[in-house]
Image 1 (tube, rainbow, N blue to C red):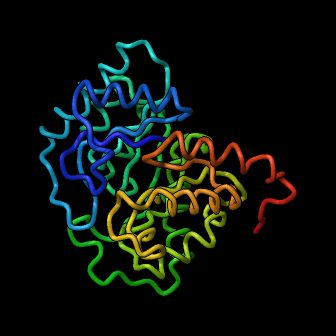
Image 2 (cartoon, helix red, strand yellow):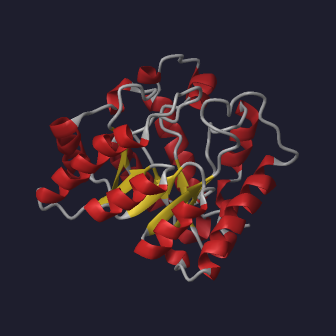
Length: 266
């Protein structure tokens, strides 16, 4: 899943694009081998200020409409925590809702059920503006897993297909470095009996900087690729990344050496 941020304040400047440039970037990511392109109009980096619903709509809907007018049939995800934006984006041609707030708004759940679309349920403790202020868990892996599965099962009980649900542990969203490391070490445990797919969004994040010593997001590609190799070993289904071509090459080299018999089991 390639990232296209139609914003001016996302933490990695290389992911920011506007209007026609955003469309070109999406098409290039598909050409490079991405399955999904994730379009977002609000930065949810730690400490980020929210944008208005009107501004978010103005940023993402025209881009999605323009992408669809090209005739490309690649899959589009709308990265939003607002039901109004999700509804408009799906109507414009998006295929999935990627909600960093994990469907905490009941209206978002209604939008997903009404459209019958794919959905990524992410775990976030708190809000982007304050989520990194002393996050606390007794057992981060179990608590995140239980929270995600509870939401996913409720959606299935309402009639939504389990095959259209992805779970994202929310690396860097209301977690300390130790919490993030524990979640990555046990990433495959999020999928209950492989009922739901698992998505990781770790690309160029601060955890990479903490592991490598690189303070600038521009210097974190190699470390990000290392985490991608771990994800492949864990059997993670979708990687949300800034650098599609580099990841496609990495995974092409990893896949032949990871037969099902070598994949970790619970």
